[in-house]
Length: 241
Picture 1 (tube, rainbow, N blue to C red):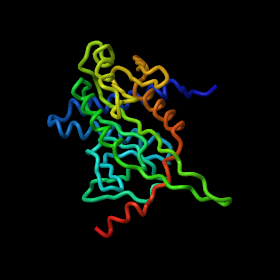
Picture 2: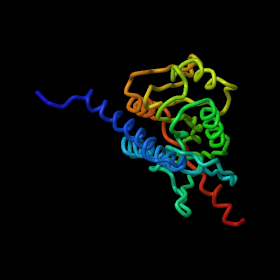
Picture 3: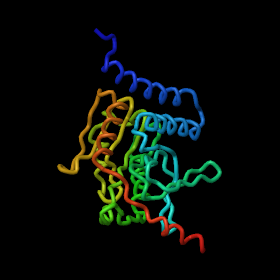
Picture 4: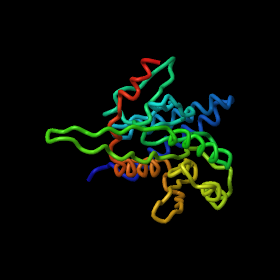
């Protein structure tokens, strides 16, 4: 009989993320350094465990109209079909069509952070995205509908007591519009996710949160399909500016 245990493997994955976030909290005094370390923990988790068609990074997002998002702590984007990703002085710039999900990553969850994360998510969702018809051997498929961009927040702990209670639910439900958050993970406490069928949020505690969040994200990405075929020439017109 094998000595391997799937339960222990999944627990170990969560424990590693929680420990690294806690070490960032304890070892770095400067808030910016602490925040950068937290971002790297989440980016490395997603880059390591998401299927290779996806990539995770801290980045800005740009559209073919020349508009830019705010800087996003964690962007999950396509690397299989994206024709270009810009790098300038260490800063990554990703075309809006390539984006699957965006997350704000900080040490602590509170109302201010949730509202800030919603603004960051909205700065990506409001960007223009192109979608071209797809040629194939027998003709052309119609342009693919744009996939919804997932938004969320990732932290080590929560300032609320209980950490995933009515206070969090109230701020998540404020003025639902193009800035709604679908997913969140508080590594020390649990996860939340939005259910579009019920229009409400569900909360899970004592669930190996980092691992549960990863599985939830992968599941949602599976159902979102592939990003649309980008109109490269729409970006190319900026060569004449």
